[in-house]
Length: 211
Image (cartoon, helix red, strand yellow):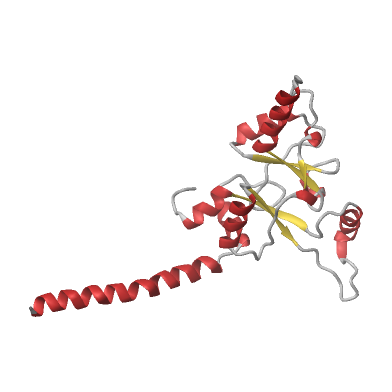
């Protein structure tokens, strides 16, 4: 009987500890931010000029076919398209995103209309989603919130947008002034793209080994 009582007591003790362990795990998970996920991803993917992690990009003069080839080469679900000539380093405040879904929507629309589209002749800028319409997060957004946003909005890529620093008087300081002026003129979010997160990045944090 004593042995049975000891076993029963031990099982209750383990059960009592379980909520505390779950609470600690939840607290640790919610403490991780989009910035932390970005830094973690930088150790697993190619690092380019934009930021760590790098974002796969194509020139704004590219065709849909060229973007799809680029995505296949890098096994990426999306590419960035700068709004200005040059690469993304000059368009962090204003850009577009072209995803697998955009490609499928283009093909689906053409099929419904009975139109034959050649991806080699369709400009990427005609199909990509502008940054002003893209769902994004800030570097301080909690990882769990990033995951929730992806689920709620049905997206697999999240731009990480850092707010542009301003002076106490409200004017933008430094080299970002012209970028913000352009953003204001086009109703784009006030901020600069610093990274891209994917569903894989987020799941790699919550489910180690899945990335």
